[in-house]
Amino acid sequence: MTLARQRLGILELATTLGNVAEVCRRYGIDRTSFYAWRRRFREQGLIGLQDRSPIHRNHPQKTPRHTARRVAALALQHPAYGCNRLQVLLHSEGMRLSAVTVQKLLRARGLGCRRQRWLTLEALATKRSLRLTAEQSAFVEASNPSFRERHSETQAPGEVLCANILPVSRLRNEGKIFLCFAVDIYCAYAFAALKVGWHEQALAELMQNFVVPFYGVRELVVREVIASAALQCGDYAPTFATAEKYHASGLRPGRAHGFAERFGRIVSGEFFCSRRVASDRLDMDGMQTELRLWLEKYNAKRSLDGYRNYGTPPAEMMDRWLAVRGPTTN
Image (cartoon, rainbow, N blue to C red; front, top):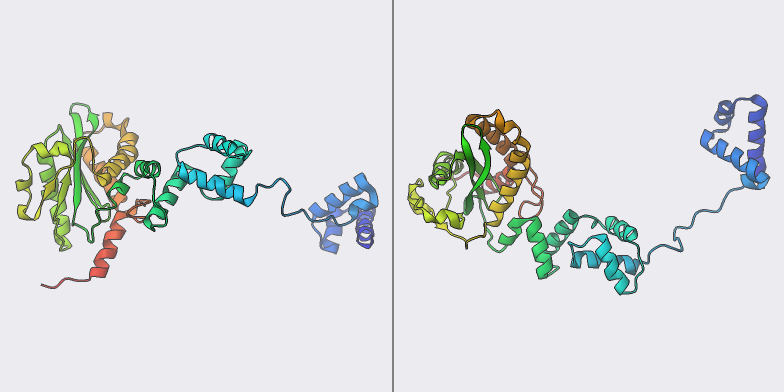
C-alpha cells in the first residue's frame, strides 16, 4: 500500500496546486498515468492506486500452435482456397475455427493472400524442399507463367529468346495495332514494337533493328528464338541478320511460352490498359514513343517476383552477368 499512498499524495498535491502539469514535471510522471490514477482512485479508492498484475502472455483462448501449423499447411496444400473454404476443411478435421481466425493465423505466417502463397510455394519448389502437386503447380504457373519453363535453364543472356505478336489496341484512323515483342529467357529483358495489322515480318524487323544491335554491342549472340505456333506459318527466319545463328522452334497450338505470356500480361495491364482513353488522341508515333519510355522503365526498374528474377529488374540481371564475364578478348 506504500506505493498507493505515494500516488494519493501526488493526486492531493495536484488538487492543492491546481496545476497537473507542474506536479507531473516535479515527480517525473506523464499525464496519461496521472489521469489513469485519478480515474482508478475515484472508482476503487486507495486499492485502485496499487500496481496491477501483468497481463498473461498466453491467453486461455489462444489458438494452439499445432492448429496454427495445420491451418498454414492446408493453405499451401490448397493455395487457391479462401478462408471460408479452409474453415470447412478444418471443421471436418474437428478444429472449430472461425473464418476470421483462419485469416488472422494465415496473415501471421505470411500466407494471407494469393501472392504470398505463390511466392512461398515457388521458393519451396526451387529449393527442392517441396514437390508440388498438380493443384499447386497449376496455381503457381497461373500466377507466374514463366515458372512453366523452369526445366529449360539458360546460362547467359541471348541463348534463348521467346517471341510473340499480340493484338493490343486500336487507334483512330489507324485501325487495329499489334505488339511484336521478344523476351530474353535468362533475365526477362524485353524488346517490343507496335505494328498496324498482323504480319510476321514484324518479328524480323524487330530482330534486325533492335535485338541484334543490342546484343552485338555487348558482344553477345542470339542463338535461338522460340516463337508461338501462329508465327510458324511464315518463312521469316532467313530475314534475320546472320540467320545461321538462329533457330525458331514452335510450340503446340494454343500454348504460349511462359516468359512471353508473363510479359504480355505485364505490358497489357501496366501500359495499354492505362492508355485506352489516351489512344483517341495519340497517333502511331506517339504510341511508339510512350511504349519505348515504358519499356526502358520496365527493363531498368521493374522488379519481377518469382522465377527467374526473384525481385531483380531485367537490366540488373544482365549487368551482373556481364560483370562476371568481364571484358572479352579477340
